[in-house]
Length: 60
Image (cartoon, rainbow, N blue to C red; front, side, top):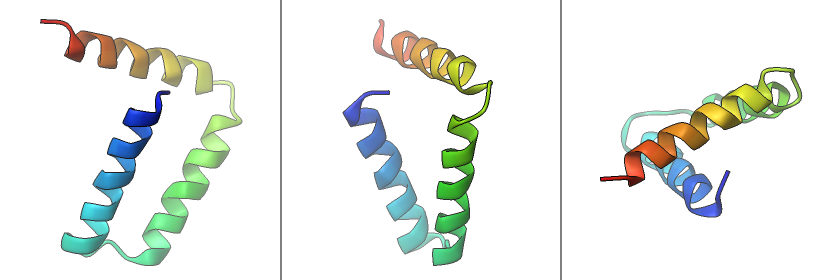
């Protein structure tokens, strides 16, 4: 996952927290979920899916 994509996701979380009523504990749960999901056997498939989506959205 690239740094710009992580920054974009971080900005989306900030906007959701600031303007959509996302609570601090929601953010903590999401972070823990992502952390533990990255340690599972599906992590490589998720990375491949994200890579395909990013490549398909960047091509004309």
